[in-house]
Structures are given as structure tokens and as C-alpha cells.
Length: 214
Image 1 (spheres, rainbow, N blue to C red):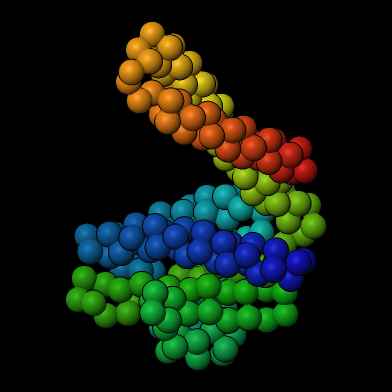
Image 2 (tube, rainbow, N blue to C red; image 1 turned 180 degrees about the vertical axis):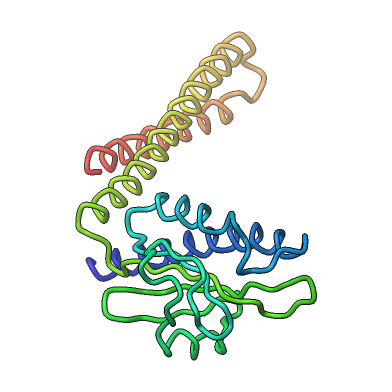
């Protein structure tokens, strides 16, 4: 069960970071299309700094050129240093989503190529994050998921309660009409409505029990 929770959180985490990478790449490539050189993109460092504050699991964000030289980095001491050889090797193995990935213990690096106006690779954007976030982070994510489930159950209970009320009222009306018009076949309709209302009562009781368990 714990393994499944970890796997779900890891998948959700990678997808969220992939979206963040894609958004940032679009901004950097827009600058390149305007004629800026990747090394001269003055807004790149600020964008990386802003990006890393969006999630506590993020450890570093950087942009490096095709030779592996770090141009912009939230770890400013690593600027002008070469990225690990495993990163450069991974840049040649893009997934179907156009991303590359390197795993190193409890850290994962996700990257995207940055292309200029001619479609040539000018460099790469990379995010380093904890593969297994701290327990506090995991608990926060679990609480969010459980909260969403509880909200869904509450909404479903409200809808069932509404439908139960409608069926009860409709059944009462049908019963009254059947009493005032004994020659019309309202009995079957009323009986069916009563059966449906009973089933709704049973479903409502089951959902209330599940909600208390959550």
C-alpha cells in the first residue's frame, strides 16, 4: 500500500514538474526567437529562482548549453561548471514527451531541450528534485487526496439526498392521484417509486458509512 502511494505521488510529481519545465522553456525560447542569445538571456536566472520556490521538493533548476556548461543555475556556485556526463548522455534519449531523465539515488533530474528559431538545440533546461519527498510533504499530499475524496463523497450524498426527496414527493403525489382516480394505473408507478426510494435510502446509508470511515 505504501509503495503504491509512493508511486502515485512520484508520477504526479514528475508530471507537475514537466508542466513547469514546459512553461519555462516557452518563455526562454520566446527570447531566443526575438534574437537573444541563450548566454545573454538576462531574465533566465530570475525565472529559475522563481520556479524553484513553487515546490519544496525542488532542489535546483538550471540551464546549460549543448556542451554541458551551466549558464544559469539556482546553485550559483555551479554556474560555468560542467553538468555530469550522465546528463549529457540522457539528452540524446528523449521520451515521447520530449523530456530526458536521470535518476541518482533519491534525486531525479528532468530536462527539456531548448531550441532556437531554426529548430536547433541551443541548450537544455533541467530540474533536480527529491524522488521521495520528506514525510511531511507526503502527508500533505495524502491529506489533499483524502480531502478531495471526502468532498466528492459529500457531494454525492447531497445529490442522493435530493433525489430521494424528489422520489418521495413524486411517490406521494402519485399515491394521492391514484386514490382520487382509482380507475387509472397509478399503483404500479407508485410502487416502483417506493422501491427506488428504498434503494436510494440504502445507497445513502452505505455512503454515509464510507464517509465516516474516511
